[in-house]
Length: 255
Image (tube, rainbow, N blue to C red):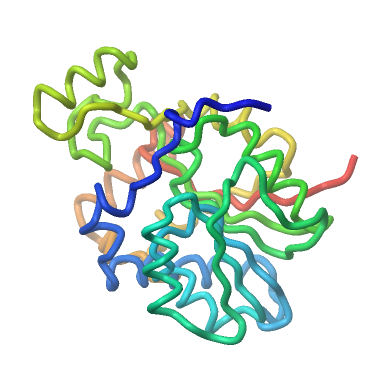
């Protein structure tokens, strides 16, 4: 498979410096990951190995290293890998400057994969999911967090309707607002996401987190009893296909 190198975002952590280096925000996300995986797996996480796909500055990966036996992160952002390697050093933690479309590890190696808000940044999301499936052990699980193309405000640039626009219009919109020159992200709709993960058995945690955010330490995102949480519950119950984002556990099954 050949991919045009211009389709890669090599400096994502630099362009989005504040969000990628926001320690408290990224630790909150990591805490939710651990709680979701612990509830679903009901096993000793310390006995499991994990790979984070597109781990960027490794703040999340560092948190996960306290809970899993061994953790490995890969990213194409060389500056992010350099920062992580210099900042986080542990015996069970390793990093690699690597392409998620061509993961260097052998088949059936990992118990857990983490793929959080990554699919829209890669040139070929289908190829990435094939690689994740390949490196997971049979019965292994991918924690998959994904944004919906049909979201009112695009989260990377905080611009209304950006992800819904055709590429040329999205590029023009970025330039007009001074937010960038090229819109690399390729968001999918709910139906596109379901096609993307069709090879896995999908366990939905979106509803659970929205219904009881405190249970998964997601109160920072959806404070219990708040108007935002009320609307989120309404959407997830009656308009699930246009919820802004999803958290799914994808289990590798062998047919």
